[in-house]
Image (cartoon, rainbow, N blue to C red):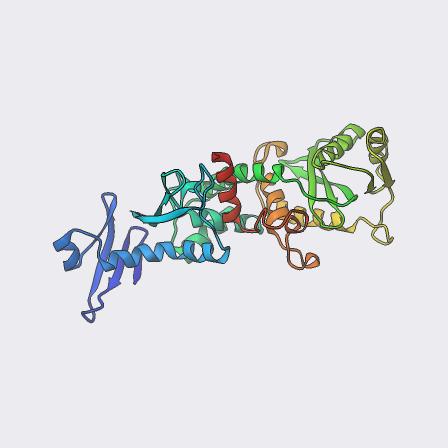
Length: 351
């Protein structure tokens, strides 16, 4: 098989040596120049070869992640396959839910997406692994033959991160009682700002991220309150910070409601260091350096995606190549795969 363009392929004849048939997307359907298609007017083996080629990345990705199809509206797994629908981007598997009797497809979570859903999944993964939007567009064209603009990829990322952030904020992780807190100075559109990061020392789970213009007591207090709100029950906390005075003043205000021990001079050279959150700051800083973010930082949705990626997808060697989410959440609640998380978020939104 030879790909001529996104809408045209050459498929070699199996019965006649040296003969190639043209498969083209015309008037909303695939057509072929072979005799079988001209006589019957129905899909031939050459068209099915093209459809399978389009479907192949999706098949591989779903099998790698042990993907389980569910009916989004009712969450039932009592489903049966009920034929396929042909589209320009490949075969779309149709299902029948035996619980509610409704028909649906395996692309329910990707409604309105003109291209193959796998293109969106690949784009998400590469974007949060420090690949630029233009390089992602080039990768999709070179490897998968999918031609899409970098602005379209950005819209995909914003769309699905908005969906996935809802999942991440609803999770109730089982966190330790020792947290590491640090702030980092960043420049956004030429203006300085600060990102406050609060990390669980044992699991490396990012409990909260807060963005502010300054480093005063109220802004430090806002970041700490945001983290405490994620925990259902707190008996005693150990919080490690650097010597910024805003931390001590903010923690003093919190001592009225939470029992907190504050270690305020954490250094890399001391046993009571802040190295895990410092390491996280380095990872985040490298990622920000590779991006051209627009608008106000506090309103930027791609930063929400970084939290999802770090907590639920990215493996850590110190955690036996597990993500922090796999460590602090009950087994089976989440799986560290983009397509699994997207489907879970869509299912919960629809139910």
